[in-house]
Image (tube, rainbow, N blue to C red; front, side, top):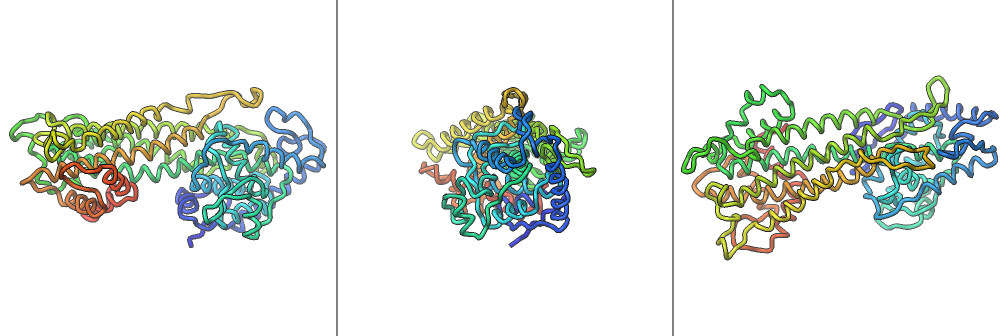
Length: 512
């Protein structure tokens, strides 16, 4: 099994995906253990002094003015974990929780938090054992980090609360730790706070969304090309010299992908035939501009994610010169903004895909295709209601595009009076990515059927490869009305697991 070694200088997006989704093992580097030991010595020295230090010998948040005596400090650290583990609602997905835990471990190993090496080792042991704390949907305001979700993870390290075992069963965390020979941690000064104070949940969801959207944007280029082909449109608008004079890199990449899919198509350039058209509709002609803008948004979000992956987010932090200082680096605004930005791009990509689908189904705009791509229109309804489903998804995506980060709500007796809502932005983006996959799947379903209905015209080799692979995957072709839900589910799976892009790339080579 692949192993990810965690050092002091951050991790990569590939590391996060390997641990969160592929179950990769985690190890601490010797450098990380040395940094943990050195920073802990600083915290222990401060704890021995009479002067109050936030998070070491004081309360938290609005209660930070109280100095805590040495005999109560272990209880203080336990109490912050227990009291902050206050999430409610449905369980969060396993991959999100694993990303959350791994990214908190990444910050702990930076040597900026003052946590002992044995705590970090226990975090790695829990991940390696396949134990997943039960984390709930609601509880994070995205400021002071993802407090409630991280608290539920820290509770598991203490052997308290509930967790899911590697077999998927949920039970007491203490029992699961015992089954795997893992000793619960006994938290000391600052450690409880250090386990809770980070943007790890929203960052983990951002990293996974970027990976999913990288595939989806290539998939959307493919389905846009299929729709252009089915509508007998022109590929001349995809010429590189046209996109060079508006030098947005995402636009050029999207146009190049569409052009590669359409190479040697016998269906394009018929726009001057029986019903001459000067230009194709915006949803066809401007596909690279819309998808390209989304690609450039992905690049910006990826830059923010890379910076955050290199960060050590905690409050207070142990600085290299030995100072322990309070700060505001836990505020989720940088991550929250790009999570919301991506939701906007996702909604627009879905919207333009739905417009192409509707055009394929409308006999007045489809340039000779049967109404609703039906076998016997009137007796058969064809894909009429498949487009309704797609339209409902698009409408939902527009609601999900409303930014969470524009909101704030005061908490902690007005000490935490401006929050990022980054966790909420991440949660809605996950739903948006999921729904975009379905929207692209419906366009795929309609466009492949439409291409097959263009009798006497030869589609591009890449298109034929997609149709053959889709039919092998259970995505049905033209014919009388049938139960559509299984076909749509098969189309969704075909897009979601990358088989659509793989089928094209076997003909075109790698898409951009």
